Structures are given as C-alpha cells and as structure tokens.
Image (cartoon, rainbow, N blue to C red; front, side, top):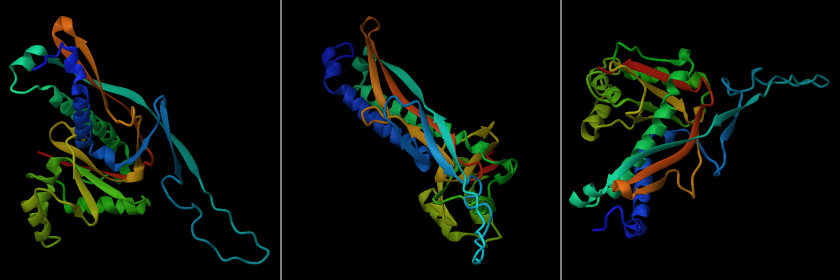
Length: 294
C-alpha cells in the first residue's frame, strides 16, 4: 500500500475518488437545500439576486377587475417588484489523514474522508437555510413549544400558506422528533380523535418509518433544524420560492477537495470547499412549526 507522503499515492486517482465521495456525501447531507429556489453562479460571483413580485400578496393590490365603460379609464393596479440580494461566501472544513492510520488500517481510510467532509458541508448548507425558518413572519407561526405536534398544526400551516398566496410547490421540514417519538406526529396519528384516527398513515409510519405527505404537503426530516435547547424544535412549512440558495460551483462541482501534503508531519490535510449564500425571499411564504420535542 502506498502511503500519504508518496507522490504516487496522490497521483494515483485517490484525490479524484475522495472528491467523488465528497460529492455523494454532499448530496446526501443537503436535504433542505434541495427544497428551496437554487441558483448557480460562475466562479468570481460574490452576490446573487432574485426578483420577487408583489411580495406578501402575490396578486395585484387593487383587487378584482372592474366593468369597462366607454370613455372611462380603467383603474390602474399596482404591480410591484423587489430585488433581493444574497451575499456569497466561501466555507471550508478540513481533516488530516496520518500515515500511521493508513498503515494500520484494514483499508485506506482516505476515500471515506471525502464522504464525511461532503456530508458535513451539505449538512451545514441545510443548517444555514433552516436558520431562516425562525425569521418568517411570526403571525404565521403554529404550534406550542410545550405541546407535541399535531395534524392540526400542519393544517394550520397550510392555511397560512394559502392565505398568503404562497406559490407551489410547498414543502414541510420537521425535526425527526416531530415525526416520531412521544411528541411526534406518529403519536398524534394514532390518538387523534378529531380525524377518527388515521390508520392508513399510522400503518405507513409503522411499516416505513416515515410519512410521505399529509394533505398533499410533502414531509421531510432534518437534524439541522433550530432547537430551543433540547425541549422544543422549529420545523417549517414553506413555498419553494420563499428562500433562495445560490451556489458557486468549481468546474461544475458544488463541493471540491484540496489537499496539502505535510511530509514533515507524516500526514495529508484534506479540505472540502464550497461557496454559497442564502436569503429569505418572502416573509409570508413560510409558516414556522414550533412544538415540544422532549
């Protein structure tokens, strides 16, 4: 087996394998990021922009069309737009691989490095996006931090999106403990009396361990959501167009790997890099779901 200090070790396609694993790990780790409005910009960009029309209403503000009378001007209706700009910034995470670890391992651990670095970066993108869930208009918030989530909470969130003309598609991201566990949807689906119990959904949960959708709202789970200590968590139902994510790929890759051979220290330092930014596009197109976790 070659060792980390050898040029041949680095030139044998190892870095490419590590980078391929990093891309797979990034894709696996970034769940929420794939649910929002994504743009990709060329290398060198430091900002990203979206044009948002009639924010908060998503319709002409004067109301319905009126009857037309000869010789009378049609009333003008306001059509507003706003440019929203996100700042793009570089992010990185690094880890060393020591020659001793390579020599003593059953297999070269280096390719696994890419997977873990990529997953960490993808998860961080999700954490950055999820931090915006708490910023949506507080009047749209549903749930109670001292009470477990209920199906009613999801219907209330859907109503908020409808009332604010949030464009489709919609998504819902919840903490895993808001889906399963003593205070999760799994409990409410079984015990709810309002809906006479929901045996089909409860059966899906029992067989598959997850809920695909409720009332047409797709349900996703993420460990990267904001929590209030360990007792309550902040999920969210939102329009895809409520949040913007901009990524600057390098040679078509959303994440890329650099390495620094440190022969003096008998190691190679691997660094995963990404360049991105996020922004809230409309304050009313998301509904926070704050409920008890434990």
